Each structure stands twice: as C-alpha cells, then as structure tokens.
Image (cartoon, rainbow, N blue to C red; front, side):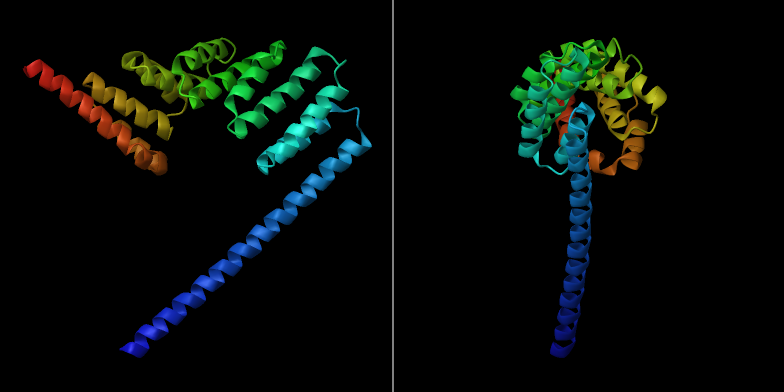
Length: 247
C-alpha cells in the first residue's frame, strides 16, 4: 500500500514538473515574440521619426506588455516632438497616453488627458474612456454623463448601451437599465453579461428572469459565477421590500 502511494506521488510530481516545463517554454516563446515585435516597432520609429503613428503603435504594444512606464515616456516624448502638429495628431497621441494611464489604473490622470481631446473623430472614443474611468472610480453619476455623450455618436454600439445600462443599474434605475440591456440583446442575444444583468432587472421588476440567467450561464460562465454575490444582494432587496409590504 505504501509503495502504491509512493508511486502515485512520484507520477504526480513528474506530471507537475512536465507541466511547469511546458508553461516555461510557452512563456519564453511569447516573451521572445514580444521582444521581436517591440524591436521592429522601435526600428520603425528610428527609421521614420516624423510619423506619429509609429509612436502610437509602439506605445500600444508596450501597454499590452504592461510596460506602462516606457509607454508613458514614449508618448510624452512624442507629444513634445509633435507640439506644432495638427489637432488630430496631438489628440491621437493624447488618446494613447490616456489609455496608458487607464491601463495602469491611474484614473485621475486618464480623465485629465481624455478631457483635453477636442478632435471630433476621437471625441466619441474619449467620452467612452471617460465613462469607463469614472466607473472604475465608482462615480456612476459622472460616468453616466459621459456614457450618454458617447451614445450620441455611437448610438447602436452595444458596448456603449451596456455601459449606460450598467450605470443606471448601479444608480438603482432598474427599469431604465432594462431598456438599455434590451437594446444590447437585440444585436447580441448571447451577450453573457447583458443577459445576467437583465435577469437581475427582471427579478427586481417581478418579471420572468430564469431564461436570462440560463443564457448568461451558457454564454459567459465566469461572469455568471462572479455575479452570484450581486444576485444574493438583489434577492435580499426583494425580500426586504416584501417584508415592508407585509408590515
């Protein structure tokens, strides 16, 4: 019996070691690929320093690699180099810088930068990022203002409509939130997050909610599982309201 257990432990250790080797190899390959991509983008900047797109592209890649410090330095340098360029060029670089701060969870800095963007083509995107930044700070009222501003140029964008629904939900405007989730579900019927939140709204409003939860569980099981605390909170609210009516 002791030998059997010893063999099992040995096999398990060998399997774990093999998994670790595979993981290390995969990570090293990804790091090598990322370094090669960064090298190519740096070369583009060196070869064509007057092309602002090269700075933006490199900074975007650095953000994906979570190298926020270098991305910030690069875009600050680019903004200095292109300080006499047209509004759209400067605002593109500012948008990139705002994204760096947002990715690094420096939301106040991100908000300051996104508020400076005046180029009409980028303004709608800047409003989206402002809404997301305020949501990340837990300021749903301000987030709502910018989400609605973004909707004026992104009327049918499901991400924007979902963001409005989420803010309305957080502010307790459940019926209105449901209307925006319905707009999302018209174009994205299998959107897990929208289905789950629409199910919560249906619970509060006394509507049939199970079909929404079933779709959410199929489409996005991770979000469904993470949302169980929110579901319990809604159930508590409903129970409290029932108790008040009975009193």
